[in-house]
Image (cartoon, rainbow, N blue to C red; front, side, top):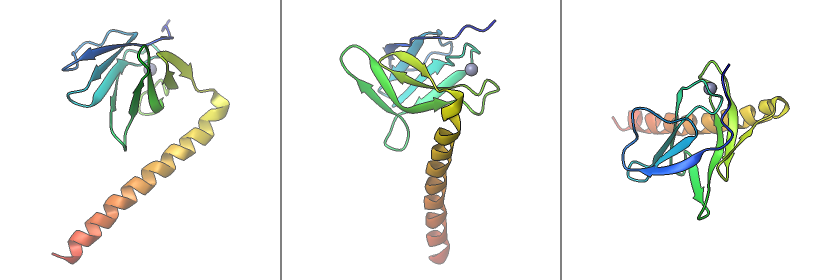
Length: 125
Ligand SMILES: [Zn+2]
C-alpha cells in the first residue's frame, strides 16, 4: 500500500539530488526550483519551478507554503494537494473540478500570450 505523506520538511540545497527522500521538500534558491517526492507516496518526482508565473514559496521562519496547489495530473495517481506550513493539504474531490478549470484558464491565457508573440514575429520576418 502506498503511504501518503502528511508533512514536507524543507531542506535547502544548491542542487537537487537524484534521489528525493519522501517527506522532504528540496529548495534550491540557486536554480529557483523545488522538488519533492509525490505526497501520495507513488514516488514520482514533482518539480515546482519558482517564479511569478510558476510557484511561489513562502517562508515564515519555520515552515514553508507553496502556492498555487500541486496538481499531478500527468501522473497516474492524479494527486492534487496544497503545501501549507509544511503540511500537505489534500484537495477534496468535490473541489477538484473548479480548481482544475481555474488552472486550465491560466494555462490558456499563458499560451495565447505566446501565440501573440509568434504572430508578431511572423509579421516582421
Ligand atoms: Zn503520486
